[in-house]
Length: 96
Image (tube, rainbow, N blue to C red):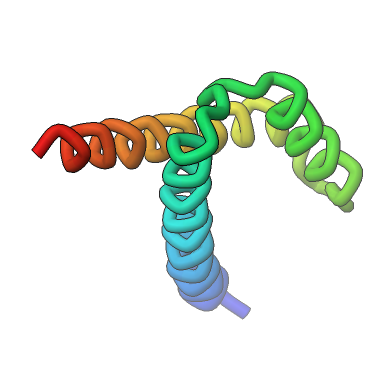
């Protein structure tokens, strides 16, 4: 197998990753709506730590645990941003 084969595999994986990350963001929007409705805090460090521990437990290599942790910290940051946007949008709608 040549380099183009492996690059093609990576391109396909990247496409699936994007689909999953966007689905995760859609879930974060819904969580943001629930947090607004139930007056829950946006930032929940214990939940974020649980997410990271969960993915680290599922890591079967070759990714370094430190790299996984950093990656998911960024993913969680983006989820929090999406949740915040959903909260702000609902607040704006409530004003009108």
